[in-house]
Every structure is written in structure tokens, then in C-alpha cells.
Picture 1: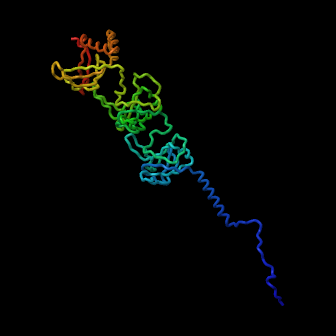
Picture 2: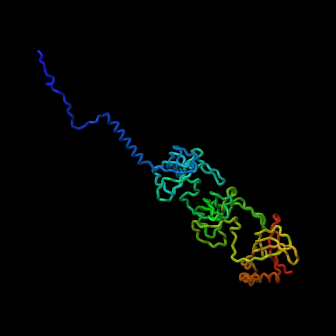
Picture 3: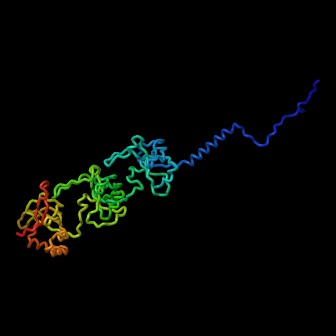
Length: 407
């Protein structure tokens, strides 16, 4: 017979916590995944380079995720965003730079857009026809890091580290010259024009040129530069002369330089030395005369064919040049006559007189009064006269010849 047993008297089950907490195997996989993700993120952050922004006037051909930043034809970064500036006048380009090139992002670094360019001086950027435009880069010399840059419109002609030296040329006007115009030495291309600007007073143009090594060592303080653009055509008493440096100079312009034979040998000129750019080779290589004398000649005949710059010869050798051609009223005859002003160089005259006239040569190097007195005696006693002669039957150019006509 069963007995009634009170349920409260029955043994009760109790949950006793075990020492130490155990994690379910279900959580191991998510935890490992989180650790790997964090490690990858840290590694990525540590391996990433800086993010920079470049401002351009226009962003032709630049696309986020496609356009690269290149240095020496090596990809050092990629464009991540292209947007308008806050004032809508320019374009802001954001680029992610590789960590290996982070040290190159200094304040004087240069950026520009490389695209196909066809100019008279050459063709550049042909590789972009297949790969698309990219951002070119030139390293700076500063040690200060920078992350915001302003792009330049034209790629620099001379890259850093190229051997050679820069000089300055000063001219009245630019003419047909421009950035990239070649510099010639003895008809060999020795450099190019890299920049130009107007003088502060607006009266001249300054050009910055770069002469490559080893040609730069032939530039000394006495070197002359002249404009070698196009055809140098000169019509003078000696006839027609046509000169050109090369086909490129003929089409795109150029500058040539050389040192005249009368200039003493000197050490190479210092970098950034300023030189005068002459209009042509004849003017540039002309020997300067520290001593000169002016005379006026009167001719009863036509002066057609006589121009300023025509030579004045003494006994067939050049001794001066014509500086003015006009007419004058002869008070005695009451009629017009030709008036020609010439510039003579006493040193040349003295050097070209014969040994029998050595005393005359010495007088020519003395005072102005003595020179004029001597010339007067030569005219009155020796029959020194000026005569117009034809220098070229083809051009009809005349020159002034000084010679003796005793009778």
C-alpha cells in the first residue's frame, strides 16, 4: 500500500556554477575573423601613403580610379576624386600616393597633366594616346612636407638633375621664340628656352635658357647670343646672304651663340649670367670700337641704293659704316645735295695705313682735334675723296669708298 509522501520532502535539483568560464565554440570563428580584419586594417593603414590635393585650371582626361600619378614613368599614385573648387573656377584633384613616394611630396614639387601635344618644336605625350592622360610629377628640393599643391599648365622643359646651367637673355621683344625653342652652338643643338617674362618696366623681355653640358662650358662672359629664327636674309653691298641654323629654327625659331675671335679666353660664365640677345649674327659678332669719329659727306649724285649700315672702306678695307642718309641744301648753289653721315674707326684706319704713313697712324690715335686736322690735310693735300661704288650688280646696293684722287 502506497504511502502519501510530501513533495517538499523530495530532493531538489540545484545548478552549481563550475569554476572558470567556457566560451562556446560557436563564438571562436567570429572572433578570429574580427582579429584578422583588424590586422588587415592596421596593415593597410601602415602601408598607405599620404592623400594629396592638386588644383588645376582644367582636368581634361582625368578620371577617379583610372588616372595615375607618374614619376619617371613609374606609377606613384592614383587619382581618387575629381571635383570643382568651391568657387567653381578650378578643379580639385585628390590623389592617393604610395607610401614609397611619400617623402617626395614636398612644397616645391611640381604636378602637371601629360597629354598629347603637337608643336613646331616637337611632339610630346604620344604614350597617352593609348593609356590616357596622366599627372606628371617632378620632385622638389625642399625638405618641408606638403599635401596641397597647385598644378602647372606646361610641363617643365628641364627636369631636376639634368647637367648644364641656366642663363638669362635680354631682348627688345620675343619675336618668334617661345618655350622649347632650341639653342644652337655651331649648329649643334645645345639647349633650349625654358621660360620668358616681361621686364618690370615693360621695355624688354627676359628669357631663361638652359644650356646642356658639355656645351655650357663654352659660354663665357664674352659670348654673344643672337636670334637665329627663320631665314636670316641680308642684302648689303656684298650681295645677298641667306643663313639658317636648322629646319626647326626655320619653323619654330631658335637662338645661337658663339664667342668672337677678338674676345680673350675666359673662364665659363657663372649660372644665371645675363646676356644681350642680338637680332642677328652679324650684329652680335661685330667687334666694338672704343674710339670713333663722325664725318659728313656731300654727294651731287643720287643716293639710291645707299642704306644705313653700308660699309665705308679705305683703300678697299672696311674702316667704318654709314649711319645716316638724307639730303641737304647747298647754300652756294641754292640746290639740294645728298648728305651722308659716316662713322669711322681711327684705330682701324691707323692699323691699315702703310709703314710710310706710320706718323699719320699715330696721329689718328690722339685727340679729336689732331684727327680732324689730319683728315683735312689728307683731303686738301693728298686728294682724299669719298666715292659711291656698287657693291652688288644683283641688288644695286652701294657703299662709300675713301680713296686718293690727287688730281
